[in-house]
Image (spheres, rainbow, N blue to C red):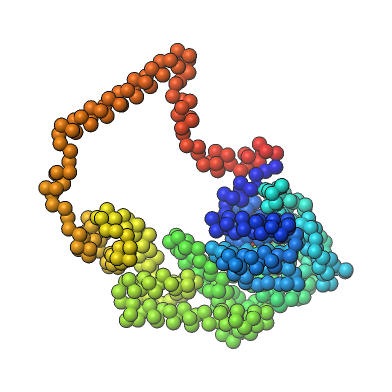
Length: 505
Ligand code: ATP
Ligand code: MG
């Protein structure tokens, strides 16, 4: 069995790993089988970044959700009928927990009847084979890959394959989904899937995509790493109309999308992983008038609070910019404190869209200069400790004062920082004479050196003796002990997942 658990654990962030352990614990306490499913497993296998954790349990996940909430998780959406919970696990990682279910269609294209099921039935009811793979998280089969529709081989062939001839009839939104996954991953449609797709378009099934489904896809596009690729694929197939005829006519704001993508790269470089779905949605809808945007969002089922968050985003970001340019933000430390709290999506939006150079230069200074200084603060802390200042509120205060000075360009070298620290704390340099006194007397020095030499010589002698003994036996003496003491190389390097797979088949 390939070691998917190893592959998984090596790819999860510490927060994701903690979330996974907690879901496992809670499922096991309730006696539910639990699996990682959907996008998580697909992304794991294809090497894409693991954006969220999708769990499926053979049972009702609502009690798990309640327990997770007690530990700091936030439930974002709970669909009691579908027994599906979308949540933000403690540590800010996205995910979902769903009950295993089968969608039973009395006739193709009718509303499915939901039946609670086993994981295998659940996987078979899914949209595409690459989304129908699971990894068991149950003690007896932890790491086992469940792939009843042979999705792994489709991934290897770089194809998106629908699971039944009725796939698009049953859920026309899959017309958007198949293009989204193919465009995102650079895959093509499997031959029969392509035929079913063409047939569905010929029968104009895309006109029957429900507004809510279209809205969910629009949101999914805004969360994509490369939204433009997906939007262009939809446009090429005349499917953008299924989301909004106005958007299809006016086209997505590709320039604004491009600017935001560039900013995202810069933020990545500065060590941030921003969630840019809201400004991205605004960029996509950027060519529409305000009232067109509002009407589009309400048509595709955005709740009023969700719409408001999008429609008022620009105003909120510009308000923040105004504050950043205000008198209270003259000192870099004040601007730093403000930017530290500014939501990253607003910061990204300003970087992409603002024409106020003063605001932009403050944000850039924050990202490229001030934050690195902040991250180097443990160095200042260590210096202050070395000067003999005890830890406590006063200590922290001094460190903050030094930080504020560093933001104005002072204290760049350790020597300069020491001077600043002494000045703030009043800790005087020790008179040089005392330093001399500290040094051991010449005689003692020599005695120490002799003792040290003696022990080194002893070691050398013993090693030479061992060498001679092993040479007589014809093998290098220290190779064995060196191997024994050598720290093992990281597992990922010595045993790549693919190799491990072969060896454990
Ligand atoms: P993403 O990376 O965009 O989140 P995802 O595959 O996780 O991709 P979701 O929309 O989060 O997509 O859905 C999770 C899983 O639920 C999918 O992988 C798929 O197995 C299943 N699924 C979602 N929508 C459908 C659908 N319309 N028909 C069948 N299965 C679906
Ligand atoms: Mg997902």
